[in-house]
Length: 110
Length: 371
Image (tube, rainbow over all chains, first blue to last red):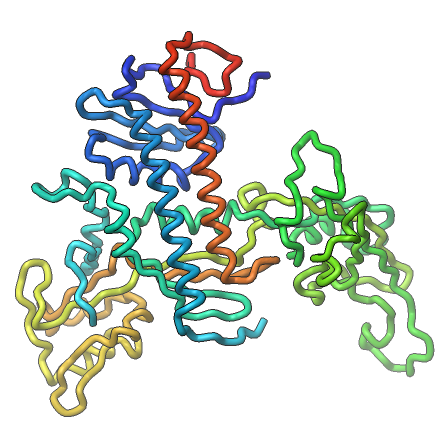
């Protein structure tokens, strides 16, 4: 059995990929909603939406439509890079707060 | 309380909630940008730890979209790996609990083993010292000698009348014994008092338990948290501010105490002399949003009730090997590895579409679907 690809372009995409639906395997609302949000932050994106088609399918579908025949794949790649910097920023802020802030420490009975 | 941009408010009405969706997208407000700006995000992001115990942590994540906060919550529950008992080889079990029931109970025991020390065992992989941890459970119940007549307490009458997680005995495999981490903290349950079964004289249990690394979405026993949840910060608007584009009226001084009693204790401050009403910025975190205040006509147009859409108050309770403060960073690491994974797949797809490959090249990892 051939290995399932992580991402595939679903049937019906335009030839220049300016409007395409991507099927992303082994992902859920966790990545779907975060990616959708980051893609919608891109002014070149006309429409972006995702769905988890069925609970027994281990995949989500991400629809991206672009203005001016831009490539949706490039937009997807950019969104992933931006999400990564976002995560890094949150990580830094968290460790900074944990190490430098004064907060209540208490003992919890179990 | 601190001024909050009205755009950040989710408004709560007597029977409905409005302004739920975030609006910070390009094209939503004419003449405003709202495209992704890392510098602006960094400026607006506020993360502050509020409370920390040896079992739980509370922190505020302010300035992110719900999709991001929710992604971290979901990852903390379902995708941060831990190690749990997965396979139970029962050599002997004469207790009243059936093999499969005791196996299920054993699986739920939280272990103190750092998951970073282990690899994930695939479906077809064989067990090695890098992916499997072994315990044995060997307990037999016997009568204690010389117990005074009339004793009814099972603990005094019998040896090993209760099988607990403390009876789990680690059996080092291969190089595991040499591991410095295990020399400092030998693998065991995080709580030795968890009851597994009860025995009576003549009954015994003899089992070998294999533990593997996995994530909570496979089975909840691998979830590192008891709960990981967030609430949005409640927000109460009072005179002289405006709410819903209307000027608010002052709370009638004769009703000030009644107004305060409509909210959770500590949320509303009433000046004992002037009976002026204000919101306690710390106390408002504890508001339960009961909406009792809407039931009293004398407060109509005197207040605005809502929540701050991008102010997430996280509570994470650790139940497993992680210290509570380490779970959130672990979820960020998982998120980033997921992103890296997707990015690689996207790059492969980009390489393929640019080189005019035929669309049905099944040897490639990424391919065009034909369905």
